[in-house]
Length: 264
Length: 303
Image (cartoon, rainbow over all chains, first blue to last red; front, side, top):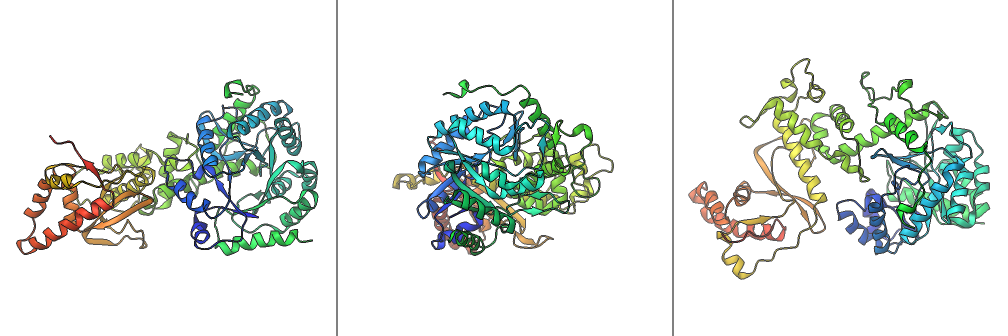
């Protein structure tokens, strides 16, 4: 069980060992111009195992992969012996512009070989297993010809890469687009799951579910997580809390809750 | 496999994503006093399906994330001119220069320079202190949206300028690499007064007439009498603001332009005779502080 390493939690995580098995870092927070975040990471790496998560790979983008960025990620992975890298089944840049968001692309079979080749390239370039995370989405495309879960599975199988399964994202997208989240889980190649994410989301007045990571995990997501564990557990699980971050004790309470669900 | 050997994307992918990107970058509607998505049908990316609220969510999320990042990068400027006007200026900046870096914070690159240019255009570079409210300098019906966005700003011109300088100094300290500590040899110290010192690249000497650096007080900003002085600089493992005695600031200011001995003489010249001994003792301490803090990284070659 792990939690996301976020700045407001650093002091408490440094002051005393927290009952977590690993911390997940956002690589973009540590590969910028300033070396100060990397120095802080050295301190955390001496206390906790780290895994690496990205938000700007642009895997489904039409633009070439950013080798300079990937090179910095590789250096970071090696510096802290991080065992794998994960990023999203999305695009985030176009026309030379960075959108700083995780955007869905059409699930079209024509796109599978293109994305799979890029995913395999990333895995080979980094030299560690690469896990692809399903995302929360708020639009679909007229070009969609496959379900998201079939698309993701096709990419994982064609590329020899892995899943990062975000159970909250499965639930949020299922509610927004009207599919059965259990059908999603049933499609997962559990032998290829590197890690699972859990997070809180907002239900807006218009009914849309928004993946805000600013609150505790929803009861329905816990139920889906229990089902995921029944289908494919055990797997490393991470609690993500990125906004309105509470004291560490509250984040750890979510970790304890997940551990409780694993008990027979 | 090399990147060049990767397959090319299907022909429809780039136009689809560029249309979606253009939709995201469409400025929000601020006419109702709040930033909201008001996309006309022609501005919606084609081929979208799913909930009607979806494009609105992405559109507003794009801008709100960037507004948040820019306020984090320039927190004092946002405090001084207020979040609404700050976001109005940020929207103009982001419309002119959309983000191109994976590092979100870099979306603010160039913003402080642009705002300073607008302030200089409004206020000129007359004598300080310029305590005229920024908003009072804005002519009704100005054609420049950057100028119009400052209408109603009650903060004095110098307060806005100081906020810009302090936020820029903090950003510079964060992104600057730590420079190797300079440990002068006895020979260096012996000749120190005759040499011009080299300052760390991140070193910035800051004057503060309003309590801005520590951001402790609520608006309106408390005013110092007399002014306070600070150094902002990268340290080996962090960044730091350090408050200085006015005479120390005077010395550092002078030492940037001429040999340390000449800068010191200028400070002594304005020192009341009764405080001359105290000044000489303080100088020894100040030299130690500057060296320990990494503000000086060497001396310029002898002329």
